[in-house]
Length: 162
Image (cartoon, rainbow, N blue to C red):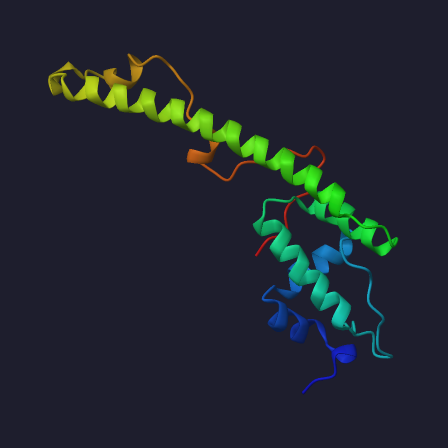
């Protein structure tokens, strides 16, 4: 078994399920502490880094941004218990999810009504651009239908997700 204090970036990547580029990115933004280097200049990682990467992946899975995760790790590294901060963030995330669900439910209802109306129309009604769309109420689809929503935290950096 490889000693944890001597993991190279490729080994750490395999064990963490992340790419070396993602690990380097996390270091470049300060999410991970810079590891010690060998005499040849290779990064050498220990057990703590693997644990932190596991934490980062789980926190991202719960919807936390990299900036939020960095703040949580910063508190932990200072010896402060970050759990009350995490709870506050999680409550804000839940409120945002609930708001998003409300928006999506309204959009679903509007779209279903449009589809029902369109199914009653004669297809020859379309001339040029689709008149069904042109004649709709002009609602805007929630962004999540088209792409991953941006984080609600301002100042988030470009994501290094894999």
